[in-house]
Amino acid sequence: MEEEEAKKPDPSPSPEPESKPTPKPPRRSARTLTEDERSRILELAGRKLGTREIARQTGLGRKLVRSVLEEAGKLGPAVPPSPASKLDPFRQAIAERVAKGLTSERILREIQEQGYTGGRTILREHVRSISLQRWHGAPDAGRWMHQTNLTIPVKAKLARSA
Image (cartoon, rainbow, N blue to C red; front, side, top):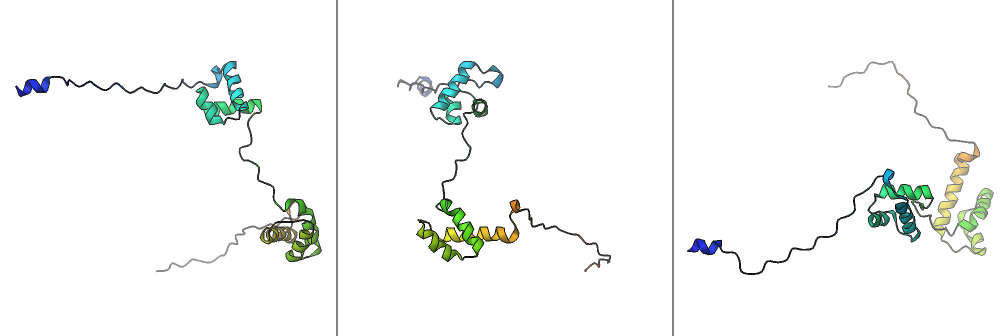
């Protein structure tokens, strides 16, 4: 009797199978890329979408999307440009004052009168870099510091230590 009960199916309704996400379209190689796909990639790039998002939406590989964008000249720089420094408008004036041999404190006072709002540390580091270039010779000045490792043979027997 117990065996019959164990073999009977469960009268409660079974849960419905979960819906599966739609599969991604198969990836395609560059040789089979159609003009419609190329125009779709360029359209999405025009909407300022990144290569990963374009690849996801089109079902193509990131490298393929990147190569299409490179061919069209639509690929932006990999690294965004660094923001402008507060020193930038004053670099020429600083270089002239360093050439005169003025200290960074004196240079700071003089360029503050011209409107410099930056800090002392960034100015001091910039002055130091200019001074080092003048001392060692900047690569564009035609004077290069040249260091080499020389090996000088010495005729001597090495003794083994115990």
